Length: 219
Image (tube, rainbow, N blue to C red):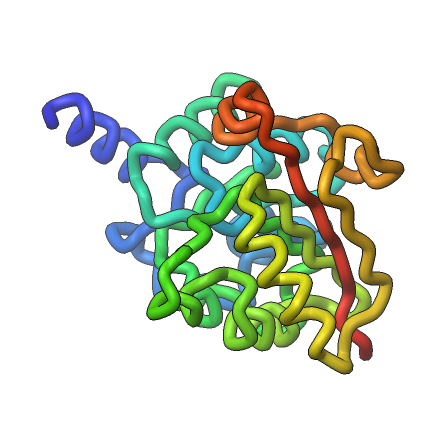
């Protein structure tokens, strides 16, 4: 508990973390470029970012873009923000909030790309609406993305992946839809840049195939 509190204190003082204690927590919507990054580079957000392996990994590969990891767990965000500080990455930020509230923090068409990496699959039927690829979340993403922006999902969970395929196939506003049940053997693998999260490494070592899909919304 003491270590956790120490880490919470650290992220309270970090410039690359936005949480409830920060003065611009309720005013950052529509202002990430002008007030936080102070440039007009495209913004990618990683939802359910955990420790932020993708946020930090992509930021190091593409310094001409900005990356924001979104998660509610402060200790996980501490890890990702620490990696960013250690690597001197100024194009990385972390937002500590519930993903259901994401529209409070990003304006329409403020986001260029969305990654959803190994989210909680919410296997119980009563939790279907809480899955990050349920229709209500997809409708949010459509509002936040610039026209032509990609949504990308990476998961080990077969139930969640198949559910997402069904949801997307029922929509009429989806284009450039590609998917694979085993990204390591797929032609889509380069799109994932071989960045691996802790969960991915753990599940892959147990023989689970890693699923991946991506799509755009029609204009």
